[in-house]
Amino acid sequence: MERSAWEQIQAGTLTAETALAVREGIDKFFAERKAAGDGVLRMDVELGLKRLVRY
Image (cartoon, rainbow, N blue to C red; front, side, top):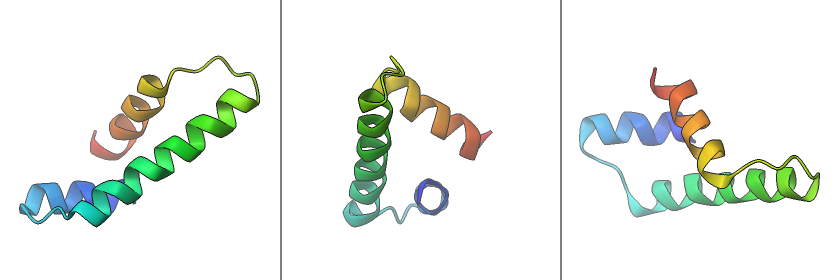
């Protein structure tokens, strides 16, 4: 979903639905990691995903 959002950002066509789907995915992943006791920060999850997709 982040790849799709990034393509939409570059094209100037990002929709609220896409942005919300990305946020929900990040929130879900973060909640799973937090429940597993990984000690990860939400910001690190989001930045890691963006780095993976954008660079």
